[in-house]
Image 1 (cartoon, rainbow, N blue to C red):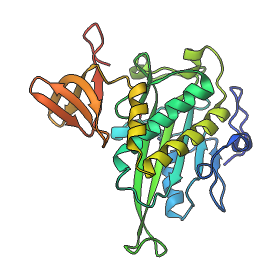
Image 2: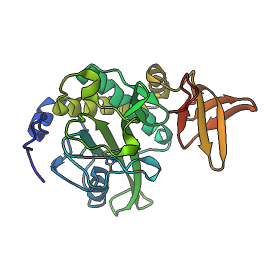
Image 3: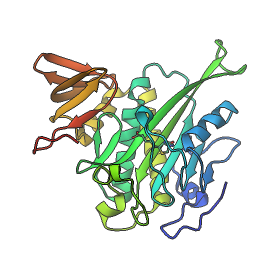
Length: 287
Ligand code: BTN
């Protein structure tokens, strides 16, 4: 673990991040420290391990690079040094049930809001977890839930740890991109044509995450959904989704209170609860 990095592209520095934090919980774990690694397998794996070891909620794990960064649906998250933001936050919500389906939606909204405020770039949200700019992926959310057996937890003997993992592409400088990603991803510095202060971005994400999760835990789903609709790249578009063996095609018309995507197809309206969608471009291809 390191406290500061020798990194020419705006080094990550925990003391700078913490001095900008305007949060009560996120990034302010009681009795332990946030972590910054020069290299780690996955910040989500590290945060899940910390959860098992009894770490308090709020702890943030950051890394300059990941050797086994993971995305949704079993995918790899490309995480070379200095190129992105790789961040995980451990939370221990008391009553998850109502908010659970919206965690990814809410976290994506928090990151989009933070990027707009800290970097002046308005990203869009593609259901369910993609942060995109002009059809290219700039970031994503991987929320993971773990049940932990612990004597001090609820009467059931279990407590729940929620890890919210955030990946944002920052700079393509010195990055050798795998061929399959070249026309699919984009980078904040390429969009903004200016350097991005990763430390400021981390503290803004922490703040927005705390705000939006506060809404979630207090049942204010409509506020989250209304804000998400404003950032949506999906609603009003013709989309295609693969569900098991079947493909659904139709017009994405709305998002439900439980975060499902409503797609109006020729055979009626379908609710999509899992998986991912592709959006139809004007030339008929899907991205
Ligand atoms: C996705 O779009 O599929 C989600 C990508 C999430 C990537 C982040 S990077 C930090 C954290 N650690 C991981 O291993 N994954 C998440």
